[in-house]
Figure (cartoon, rainbow, N blue to C red):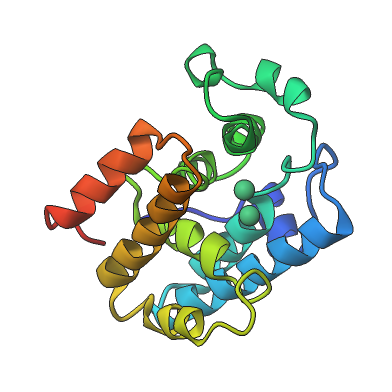
Length: 195
Ligand SMILES: [Fe+2]
Ligand SMILES: [Fe+2]
């Protein structure tokens, strides 16, 4: 669990004010705002402190801060070991790198892994992974997704299995590769390492 007072970057982001290096279209900001709202409601339902609720909200706002930057501009921002990630997965590590030292380390980690998942996601990281997939603007009209959103706090392990399964199925159907982090996340969920 994260700890400590909010940093200035977290306090701004919790109110929807992004760092000036963010590159996000109005549609993207609307998605980030819906993810932030879900994160806030789940943090509140978990009974977290007001500081942690604000931190979870800020994580939702910050996660796609570089989603609309051209991938070529993101490559220099990520570590050598992350440069072979799929292009659509570069924005998480790139934003995480920019936020290092500016926000709680748990926020950095959640944002770094929000696209592909990771077997060692903590509760904040799992919540961001789920909120990004289940936010109502992305899945509008699907009762199944609304039902999963409602069960995140009471049964997070089961919801993780549903969402990771859905994401992997999509990759298989589209004949796309499945990243090692995603496969290890799936295996860890099945072996009982649940949130
Ligand atoms: Fe993203
Ligand atoms: Fe997102």
